[in-house]
Amino acid sequence: MTPGLADNLETALETDDGAPTSIGLAIVDEPVLLPPTLGQPAPSLPTRPATYSASDNTAGSAPSSTGTRPIENHYIHNTVSSSSSRRNSGNYLDSKKGKPAILEGDEKGISRTDSRYSRLNRSLLLCAIAVALSSINYGWVIGSVNIPALVIEECSDGPETWTNGFPSCIPMGSIMWGLVVGLTPLGAWAGSMFSGVAADRFGRKRILIFNNAFFVAGALLSSTSTSIVQLGTGRFVSGIGCGVASNLVSTYNSEAATVRSRGFLGGFQQLMILVGLFLSQVVSIGLSAAPLWRVLFSISAGLAIFQSLVLFFVPESPKFLAKKGRMEESQAALQRLRTGMDISLEFEDLVAVLDTRAANAATPPPTLWQVLSGKTEVDLRHLVFCVLFLMMSQQWSGAKGVMFYSTEILSSTFHLTTSEKQHIPSIAQLLTLGIGAIGAVAVIIGMNILDKAGRRTVLIASSLSTSICAALIVVGSKLDLGPLVATAMYLFNLVFQSGAGFIPYLSASELLPYNVLGSISGLAASVNCLTLFIVSFTFPILDKALGPYLFTPFIATNFITFLFSVFLMPEAKGKPVSQVVAEYQGPIHLVSVVSPRCLKKPPPLPVV
Image (tube, rainbow, N blue to C red; front, top):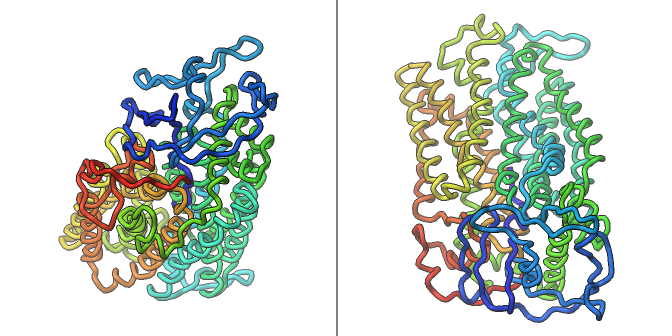
């Protein structure tokens, strides 16, 4: 999915006396030095009552005699805590050993892990899975049209017949079928446009529950469709649900994640989309014949209803609750996500970050035009371009064409006769099933190597390999070598999903400061969905026009992504957003592994 990963890389920055210091992500062994200018303390902030006690993790009296404590200074995406006392107590992460700190003990003398540095725990994982059921539904919607495509549009299962008021198929040409398929990403674009505003007002969890109404309505329209218009409308309505899900699932998981689990949960959405796509293709083998494809479409409604029930047992985002001033609920929600851990310091950091933003709320965020034109205090044009390009390149790669149309492509490649197409499962359908499975495996591989090799390195390897695989598909198609085409399509999905498929979802939150994240994330989501609509709509048209050269345009698009990765892509591995901004600020420019701009003294960055 999609943009909207606000605050994905907020990291704790501790100083004793306000002087610049080294910081590092909890998952990184070596500390990263912040440029000197970024070490300047923010303006003084007001005091607030200290009502959170670290000893019992509940509201309590202030530790100081005055009953108040100052809110600490902050930097972009960094929470500054009163580190002297914490460091003396041993409540910090040993960067060399990489082990979470242990608090001295609660009132009962039982030591508990400091939740700020915990890994993925059972409670957090279960909540992430419950929320990501929307992503599974997303994958189900986009994958369910692949295997039964020939049955629906070409009536390959036999002549059109009507039973109980429903036709066995809905015959249409390739252009019209491309439009029906493309209406899902067009609906996703519409959903992504209002989901962020709605979630900020009503909450992530509540909007996810309400969003399931789109999945239910879309499934009912599609499964009972008797015309092209009704089928297309159902696909569009389901697409709205997909767009909302792609935004809110990533937002919730990023806000609920610990520092050390953000890398995994950052790719979790793409993984769950591919799981849903794979499951839809597995079930499609038995439900692609007429009229069973209607049952296949209706399963999305059942999944949506099931998730709505499960979400009642999932806590709301602690960050959202804190933003609304519901501190006790926020603290309780955070504790549910950190079962068995001491959350007092993490909760103080969360509240302090929100207090800092509230103190700076008098300064309005820059407009979208100011950001795009570079008329901001810090020129973000290069980083904004990179985010938008990555979101566009994810969809122009041709990978979604493989997901949507692989059954038709392979049926043509292996020259299946009408009787062979009617035999379920056909060889094309079985091969499509494998393509879906290998995509999910590839994301798991990519999630494990991303923090080791770095985003830029992984994207370079992934995009170049995808371009080579597209060339192999063209060669195999031209030489009429079905096994080569199938193998190349497997490799295409493997190398794409292991890097270029999910890295764009991380880009906005890793490259942009918080004060522009909302506006650029919305624009990036629009670019992503509209590009997917264009590719989905034109893919069958290109198939008819180019024949064996169908993947030739995708050789070029993926190679362009490779060139972008080499010459323009920033490296965000192990860096807070403030350092990324300092190194890569300015108009669009060539970069190297270590940007020379980081050697220049950058201007002070605004506190957000």
